Image (tube, rainbow, N blue to C red; front, side, top):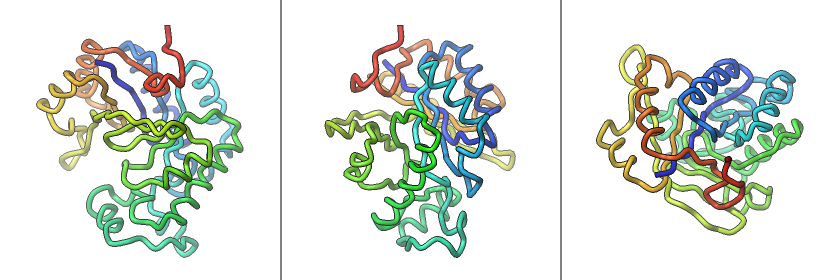
Length: 248
């Protein structure tokens, strides 16, 4: 079994926590980690306004960390921009945001033109930093710009909830997720799917581990990660399609 490992929702406001998570993951044996970076989290100033954050990302990239664009606001544009947002979201997109993901599926239910506009804003902020870009992951895995648009923008890898796509060659692999959610009044991290899902994943040829800020609190997730590390080999996203060489 091989497993991909990604830390989601990284932005200038939480990168000290993200740096701590990377150190903890590396202490468990992680060698290939992806950072899913939000350029303007919940309407905050764009990432290129933080020289310290960009320098940290550049240093991580130099260590072999893969950097992915993770939306633009990671929040509904209706909330992040108020009256300045012009996209008209369909009923499904409104349902997903209202009832499933706390308004964070910014692409879900939008027309293609609005999705392309959000992607363009995210890429513009990214390109101002000069950082390398490994690929794109939509916030919450709900909705995404058209693959043809991403391909035209030079994006190589695109991850959905259950698949990883190599856009230049139209290849795809099934990659089921291991992830945590929040439960109870205290928001304690809970393994989605429970131990039965974990057991099934440990028998799969390729899986992805999706971590979010807060998931490593309490120690339960680290015990699950220890099982994953013991059972499989940590691979990079680009290695799946031979885009990058395996780390030795």
